[in-house]
Image 1 (cartoon, one colour):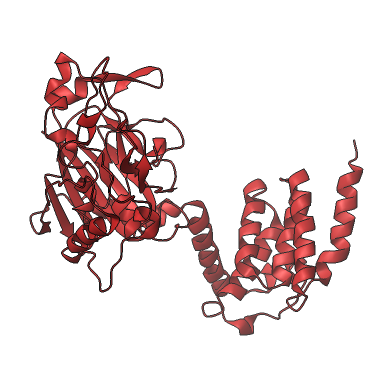
Image 2 (image 1 turned 180 degrees about the vertical axis):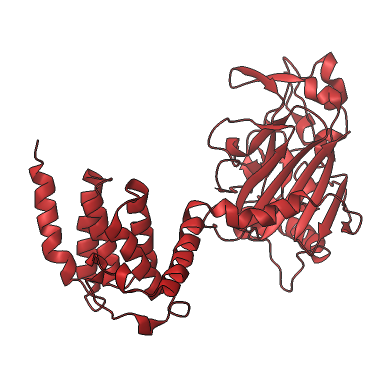
Length: 418
């Protein structure tokens, strides 16, 4: 059955798109682009509308977007000759330093010419095809280009030549002022890899600290049928000091859910390793790789807790408190060993995610008037360890990358062992 709406759209496009030029006003350009995009919402896989969008970009000499559109058309119909020829033209215009301009006569409508390939010298055609192949590989198979850096990092196992970073112990922050916490932070940053003149803690991370309040302590298990005032949860060293005192540990660890204390999990509830203070921190300047090691035990792997209505190993959450403070907002896990993500979908092994960690006054500690602590829960960054040794390899970026295969600004490895 004939689609009258589609016919109307194509007729309208036929009348307006060729009239758009690089010199057209921004309002004119936006009006046409909006119309095309609305048409694509109705017919997202229609090659004729896609071709008009590609023509629109070509007419305003936006060759990068034109290349993307022609690639999309060829994914739908690999035999579309017009799009193949137009892609060659766009590549020539986008990369004139590689494809000499003198071999072409610019014609606004030449992307519709079926005889273009016959006019191109064979040697030049081969060069153009190589360029097009590189473009297609870049957009369709980025892993082929960027995986080299990731593989290099994964094959870096000998850390004997790495710089050893001092691990600072935990400390108690209870009832300190915000400025006192800032001074502690600045003192540790001054002696870190990220030292810089006039450093100030990032306001989005530390700005919500409240003066003269208690902090979550290092309690790792809750007591069944507890009736007290929860003063135990603020006693001793403050949990967040594992990160604030160790700025080089860009990605910290914490237990997002407090398990109940039983006889069988006493070694975790009373042990030191539940504080998740690194055993060691090392840095390789050549590859911009930080390696942190943590202790876990075989018993820990056997512990189970009910979380959101299901029995699971104790989940651990990645914290980007330090990473965010130094501008590394974006994270992606590119390799796991003996680790499972807590959420099967929408986690940081599937796509680049953003850290959202910050410190504020909250009531999760249960103590009167609340405690300074890290929020929020980030289920996309939770995982469980099912065998030792275990390993997580992360990529960190300061700006959101085009895709997860891009080379990282910083590589970060977390190792768990007994």
